[in-house]
Length: 185
Image (cartoon, rainbow, N blue to C red; front, side, top):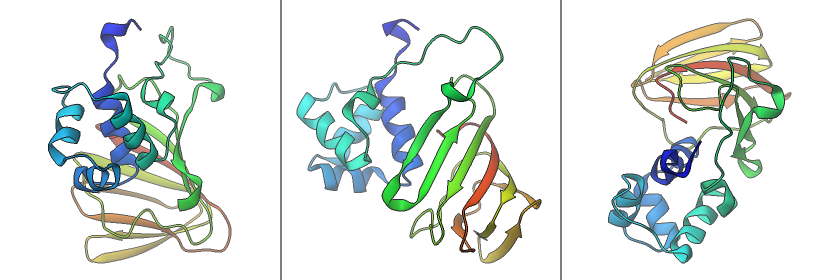
């Protein structure tokens, strides 16, 4: 990957969406304007190092994460050591991107949720479709106004524009495999 392929705006937007934060939330916590965050994500503004440090802090990632370039993929196999790990320990939710090259039409994600972990206070929506298979534990999935309790071996598919939220409904780790299209991360 050469420098011309790197997209800082996409990287920041991807991390922000993974954290289920709005542009307004990031701007307020970073002490910058909503317009600046929007322009950065659309590559219409070049942020100062000071602004980038604040944004990275709010997103809970080292500033280097915003600039780390992915190695050029040389084949279809993704080794475990190539997984990209996103999430924050304080939320109890970790996502491992099993397709970390960001140039696929579908994304495969391995999610690990600590007991009591919730993906957010608010329901999340985005374009596309999701399919989740429970590998271990129990998941409470709120999908619109309906709640589903899923256990090991269960699978659910849904339109991602349906507001949704995930909770670990058990007192052990919840492990789930997600297929998402188009890739939101």
